[in-house]
Amino acid sequence: MDKKKLLYRVTVLFLLVFLVGSIYYTPYTERIVIIEHGMNAKEISFMLKEEQLIRSPYLFQAVARFKRLANKLRPGCYDLNTNMSFGDMLTKMSEGETYGVKVIIPEGYSSVQIASLLSMKKLVNREQFLKVIREKGLEGYLYPATYAILPGTRAEAIAQMMVEKFNSVFSEKMLAQCNALNLSQRQVLTMASIIEKEAKKSEEKPEVAAVFYNRLKKKWLLESCATVQYALGRNKTALNLADLKIRSPYNTYQHTGLPPGPICNPGLASIKAALYPGNSDNMFFVAKGDGTHKFSRYYRDHLKEKQQLKKKY
Image (cartoon, rainbow, N blue to C red; front, side, top):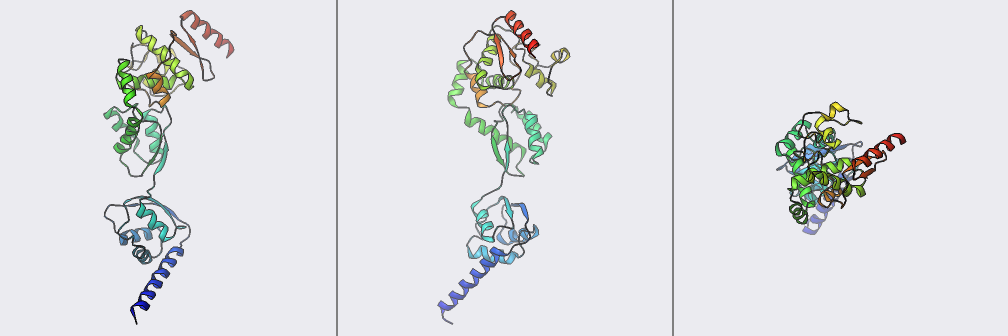
């Protein structure tokens, strides 16, 4: 048999193997599989068989060799199913199309809330994640955004991912503005976290910031209910007198100045408001019940606003 005929038959054989492998489905199954560093095509093929994603590891290996991908399969976490051909699986693994659990961190979430969310998605041990945050003092630096997190990622790495996102957002210009305010980055973040919790409407955030900065200048108590909520460790629809007397450095009804650190992880609008507060002499604000506030410069006006709102609601 001449070389041309032999080459033709070998090519046809591999094409048949490829086509058979591509249509050789099992009943629909979907799995998240992890390829460890150092695993070869043979080991991967038998793992896929164990996961009931393929029936023949040998056909899978043959297709991998035919497509010249046997030595190009990358470690990682992959979302595979039996509707995929062998070629589809191999392409995904050779191109490193790894799977990540989508996690949306809302603006204003505390580290406790973030830990609970990640735990619910089975990405971290809640207490272990919180331990990392507390030991490194990362409250306020876990930037609210959408993340794709690979299962098995260590708690430290997930926290670092969020901190790196924060560092990419907090620009050199923002750092310069911190200096202009004679505040550290942490102090600005602390202010931003209070603004985040107190102001629901973005357009009100600079005005809320102005009130708190005005109070700081006059060495008044900030009297932020949000900081008391943080001290209590739970959210309450309404605080009572006993709550306002809780012994905590985060209780701004008892301690002047900013609390020791952020009470949540603020979004960009709140950070900008803390860096560029509104220009006003207001010293008070009261919630109107619709997500907005009434602002006042004098205490007597503040009391009138509160009384009118009580009558209204």
